[in-house]
Length: 170
Image (cartoon, rainbow, N blue to C red; front, top):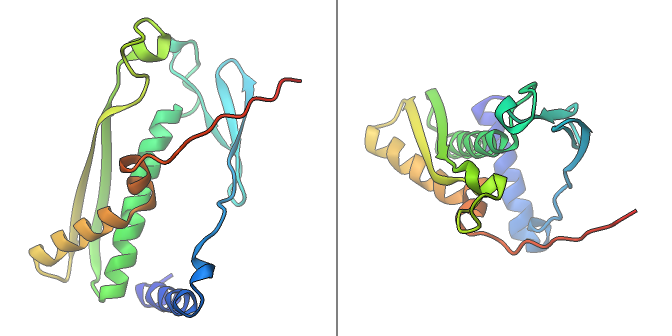
């Protein structure tokens, strides 16, 4: 899809939501993971074929697929790149290059339950954007900052929503 087609689609959607704000709210399609074997899981969703995750051998997996935390970093990186591209299209900026890299740190003691004072969560998440386009450097920086503030995955990570757990035992 061209940037003008992206801009037109966003304008149509924005007009529809402005006319009826209730159209902005949606319940997102659930993701379901099913354990296949060992630590390999299959994630099913609405459009793509199944995605697989696995853990490295040091954790008991076979490294046959990315681990779940890598998919989280990938989701953050691709969401940021998508929102940057959407904003560029809206502003009429042509992007010649766009790469988003997300790094993080972790401490396996949390995952392995070796120290309950250490979180199993990722820490020190860093996003690096390399961008080039037909706009001034300051305008590109402003574009990236705006996109960062409006990225659904980035906002979810920064503004942690309430999470619940339901357990069904067969």
